[in-house]
Length: 484
Ligand code: BG6
Image 1: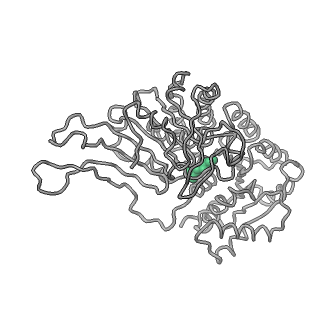
Image 2: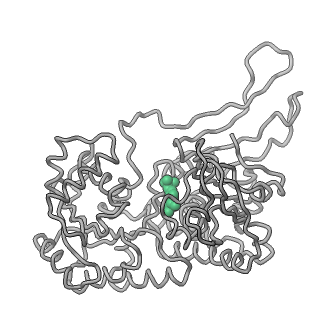
Image 3: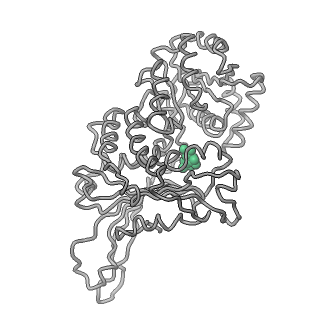
């Protein structure tokens, strides 16, 4: 149970969209039910649809029933009083007066403007909010991705919002930062002494980050085709994971201290020349295959259009700083992979000398595996004696599980954490402008190289582990992807 002090007006633009129904409303429902948000908070859906408030409440209810497992009729009968609807056409500035009238009832309330619309509307929405003097010092704005397709478009987009909101009022969502295990990286690294001396090039051989999805583009072909794996997943989600693993200890847990350290990591990425793009990047597209026992079409057949958009990418990143000298970071992400599996692997170096008579190759180097999906877990792989009386000491690898022994009744979704943090005005888990820009600078270099066809597009079968070139990218350094 939480506390009932987080009171605000929560304005949900794009409130009848897929994300709003699948993630945002369920998150708000649970936050209210668990008393993290005051029952006086108003959840104001902005929509162009011409429906009554009763119809809207019925729609919310039907979607909650669809997307959550623990719908509580009795609670909903109270929750529905927090639900408001305002009819706005985002292209019609005068329709924003409807919103102003509602918000003016509580002029001093904190206002959270959650923009779950296409980014094409961000500028217009902010402009209309400003025109109607809806933006106050107590206002915040939440931006959903995609935040641009490259550095230039991202700068233009951010500038439109920054014309009306200050940087400290802007919350750029990366839902990976709301995942509990991702936050646990900070706890693991900075509240345990034994990782401190080991977390560097002296003891770590390399790091792997994999975000593999078994699903395809799920009816979002047109969106996805404009973006591809590098823009859709790597530039944001994988970069955030990498930064948390690679950053120096921040001087405190506050938002700017953490974000200062993350941005330093991005600035330390070794600049990729044409040769590096050829050797250290792989892009690929899935062709027909099978997923979870069913035949599935290839990416191109899904929309029968020609496309050179990658649905898979693997990249070796080198970080030029003292901590990570000669420690490669191998990252990969793809759709229609064999299984859903997202993990970070910290591969430690081998022991310098073995005193055991067993074959040295039996002594596996220690490995820390942080799994985000499908189940969240943290495991440290250690060597241990096989119990028994055999004359020579026999060894085996065992897993030390670092999962929290505390059983939580329901595991909150990433969006619950992020929405609550916006309401609490805690920006630690949101991306600052300079982080977004640095990540784009790096991605742009690769995208430009791909446009020059420095790395030819490979194909991989849907339901496989990706193209063989992705195995090569790590194998040529004498290493292999974690496949346990
Ligand atoms: C989104 C991407 O940001 O993240 C999707 O746009 C992707 O393409 C999704 O499927 C993956 O999120 P999760 O939390 O299921 O790994």
